[in-house]
Length: 282
Image (cartoon, rainbow, N blue to C red; front, top):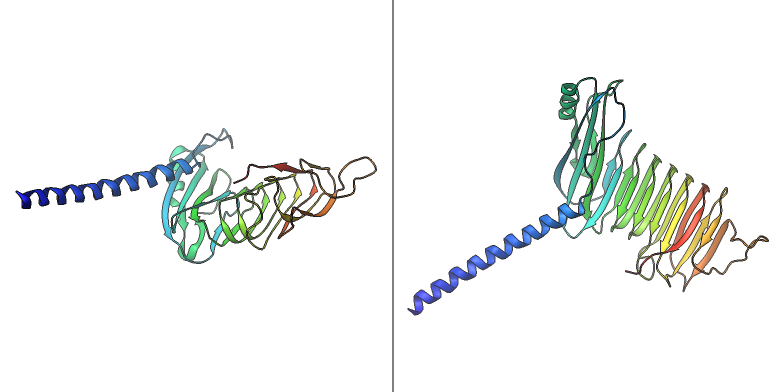
């Protein structure tokens, strides 16, 4: 009887471990699906053309700088997660004169990830025969990034590391990032949401030429703040130790310590307003 009982308890333990592993996998799967926001939706590129849209997912081992090139038309969204590998979600969109051509064109587009140099390859686009790829990439929270786009926005959430990014026509969104972050857009707004009590890392330097800057931070955030605009106004939800203009407005160039000071937070624009707002502390 004792031996049978031990055997029974051993079986229960094995089954329990298996169920726990399944539950953990299901939990990860649920998290991944919840965090993934990129979808195929109807778009109004050209009513005369037929379209195809699909999302391909590919796990990629981590190791080194993650380089993403959105090419001519493609946005890039990078999100930090707790895992040590990458998940590349690529949205492939095509336009062609017939539905069969659009479907066939999508199958010819391939996503390259060798050496963590992520980009798409495919046939040469021409009138009535075009393809685009946008990315949603999950990466370890401590990752170095190099991102390039042309007609597409760039978004980075919950990542700390050395980051460089550039886009020409598209907005920039940075939320809860850290490290040494440098980037720009020519035509697009910039949104930065800071978290914690101070910047964790070397500095933040982001700029736009044609677009507003929206910089949000928690109360009592400490940093050295530099922000400016040439053609626009500056507003702040925080009291700033700067001299107001004759009209009682904030100056167009601000260079001031917040709290106890710290690493430099620089966000500038040429043609657009600057707003300093409150974000919830994290």
